[in-house]
Image (cartoon, rainbow, N blue to C red):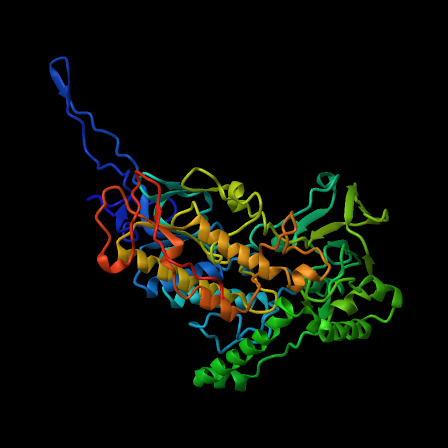
Length: 571
């Protein structure tokens, strides 16, 4: 890309001239206009210097696992011209936002960490939120990501500039331009609270589980927990002993299995620290056990019958009252909705100060909550464990592609991407945890690292070929998703008889990956250029290198031209 001879001025977002090696194409060099004669005297009139817009090779949105992982991999690939735009004041993503009582991971710690950043000091086999957040802070420090971080910088709009072949990014701390954007905000970023009649007039305290109000005293209060998902399964046991009355609104019960959690001994920590191969072996064992479970979820749901019997036994052991047990017994196959792990959830629900309402919340009348079954309940506070905007991500209305269409418009019929990473019409826009990359049984860090492999290979190939941008062909994207949804039809998420947050409003599963993490890694190991249209900047119309193997590269004056060849089908 052509560069200006002037360095951009620092922005309010905290950028410095050392962070930007190139200015935006629209930056104007400072100078003065010709003096204008006024009467017999010449008066110098100095033109106002326009504010330079910082330009970077890559702009990363979000500083959770995906954003920090992207930063590490970019630096390792020799790409240091990037920023990580974070709307909050610290790193951590969902592990920063979710600080509710009892918050912990339901994936073993030695698997829920980067392969390139093992942590021998995990305190428990299933570590809590403070430990995971501290791990991410350490990653930011150890891998030199602090100079790239821009806190309190929320992206309000990203728009592809066809003329300049770059992304125009507007944030709450100023504007940026970037050759490529990596969306790593994740699907669990924006809380979802139902639009209930009367909620605005509730006189007590209201908050979502991911926006916990630690200043509100729960002691002896009448608290309503709305929702019985993964967050609620941790919150309920944590707050039940201290509240006066706990009312749990359960629209659909969940299957719960025992949580095999324990403290990791000092001997284990020393062993893992001194002999990293032992930690690697532990991680490999955890990985293999979860890979073996995949077949039951995606191809042979009948194999889950034994697991369901274990869950039924766990329920019987935790709840003696047959009436309550009936309320807590799901009517769908285990695995259809997210399986919860807890040893304390059922005892907390069976406690004397807890009431389980087998219905959702319908409306609010003052301090009275009215359930869908008509029952009424007086409370002092409402905690919503009602999930996030996953299939209708708010960011979708802020990102506009080559034809001015937003993701929200593009995805009116459901989210889809090529290999969960790129979308036709949005050149050089890469997702980390994109459509159909979620998991129901293993560590999302495995999926994140696979997508980072794909990202780095894409950027590297662009440099090698001499192209400016890339976007998937409509045909390749459609073929990928048709095959993916065909495979989804036989999974437990589609055949298990439930309605989960994995499904969009039309009933299509646009969240989960219908396969193993190994198969996804194979599918994203390398970018297949036959699935892409490559774009040149207008002033770079030179013919592609003969060694590239491409039949053509597109120019801005015409539609992108796809390289021809046989498309790879998902492994």
